[in-house]
Length: 244
Image 1 (cartoon, rainbow, N blue to C red):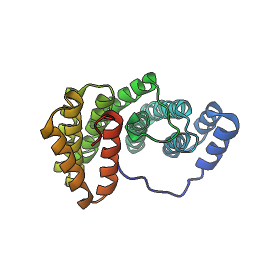
Image 2: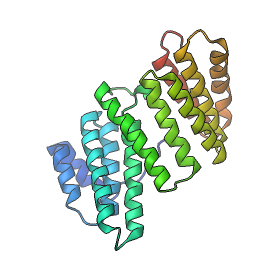
Image 3: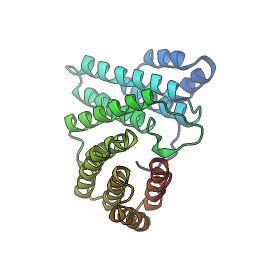
Image 4: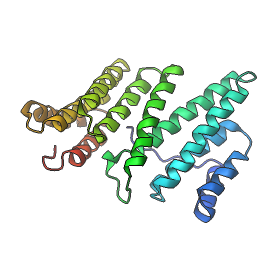
C-alpha cells in the first residue's frame, strides 16, 4: 500500500539472490536457514521473496520463499521466547511482514507486467491477509498496521468478487487510517469502498461519482498520486468495461 523505496542490500541478501538465480528457491531457502542471527535471516527471507516477485516475476518461487520465511520466523520465535522475549517479538513481526507482502503479491489488482496469478495462489494470499491481521492484533501494532491489514483483506475480497465483504473491510480500514492520522489512506479506502459498490452494481451513479471524487482528491495527500494510480488501476482490473 505504501510506495516502494530502494534500500541498500544487507549481507545475506546477495548470496541468497545468487543461489535463487543459479540453483533455485529450495537452495536459497536452505542456505538462509543455515545462517546465524535469526532476525537477519527472517528479514532476508522477506527481501528474497520480494526479489523473486519483482525481478524474476516468479510467483511460485516468491510463495515458496515467503512461506518458508513465515514458518522459520514463527518457529524460531517460539524457540527463543523463554530466553529472549525481544527477539521473539521481532521474529513474529517479521512473520507478519512476510504475510503482508505474500498477500499483496498475490493480488491481481496491481496489474503488474509479467505477473500471472492463479486462483490457487490468490487463495493463499487471502489466507495470508487474514494471518497478517491476526498478527497485527496479537502484536498490538496499532491503527496504521490495522488499517493496512483491513485494506489488504478488502483487496482480496474485491478480487474474489465479494463486494459486500470488500466494502466492509475498506470501511474498517478507513476508520483505522483516520485514527492513525493518515487522511490520504482514509480517502483511498473510501475510493475502494465505492469500487466495491460498483462491483456489486455497476449502474450506481453515486458510487461512480464517489470513486471519481476520491481519484480527484487523492493527489493532494502525501503519496496521493501513487494512491490515485493504484486505485485507478484496480478500477480497470475489476471494472474493465466501465473503468474509473
